[in-house]
Length: 157
Figure 1 (cartoon, rainbow, N blue to C red):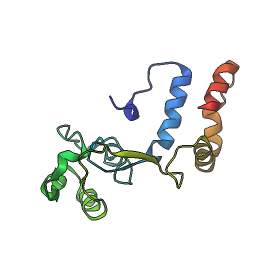
Figure 2 (spheres, rainbow, N blue to C red):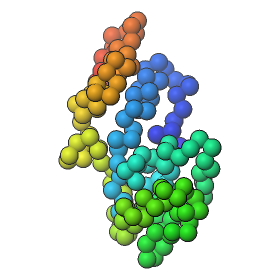
Figure 3 (tube, one colour):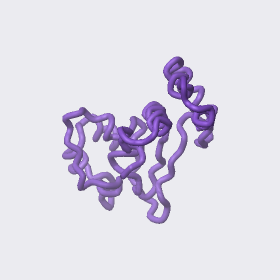
């Protein structure tokens, strides 16, 4: 199961709060396509967010398509397949803006979109949450009544 879609119904209070924060920042992890090893539906390789989350709720996700390489032909994108499994505007965005995988020996590379160097930093997450969810971010980290060791752990996360 992909870590981005782990349900949060079960688990500790701290785990649930961490997953709530994840919902706000997961789309800030981009992916440089190399050999097409990234998950087609669950990783942000289009720059728009994970396809699973940006398609309508009633949209059918073809589970036979696992990785990006599954929609590539020898000469480039499989336009027929992309238009068959995606909304037309998404298929067009992919074909017009994203180079198809061409490297055969290098896994796709994730990067942190909030930093110019692509490296993750806690500061960038904090700044992002504070600007986009000022009060809500504080509530997700500091929960009244939790033991200090949990609060400190959440702050560090």
